Length: 172
Image (cartoon, rainbow, N blue to C red; front, side, top):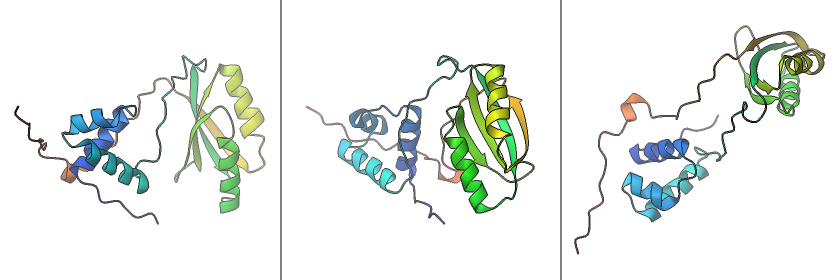
């Protein structure tokens, strides 16, 4: 089991700023947080070393990229064993249509978020790629009517910063 990192209010502010704009340069980030650039750099490095920050990436709009139809596919596999789960997950993640996959509890075993060109592409993905697999017992798909972007992860209510620290200003 992965251990939980101890995060203070500055760490959470760093995470919030970087989730909103991962292209922020260290000095600009430090200025927003009113901390020294060297402190900011050390804290970001620590957050990466602790695997709180696991990477930086560009957000691509699938519609603009020519993939305007998104769907969520609920899939059941049998037998539901670790080797079958691992194999199915690897197969689905290797498909260019896949945006994300969730291994879940409940009625479905997996929820797969995909983006495709049109309904013909959706049908081919469902029938030729997913339903044709021997471990797939059932699938249902739902077309995404609207996607609201994921919002930045914020601290639990009891860990929200109550004040901002200010660096002293140097008078000439």
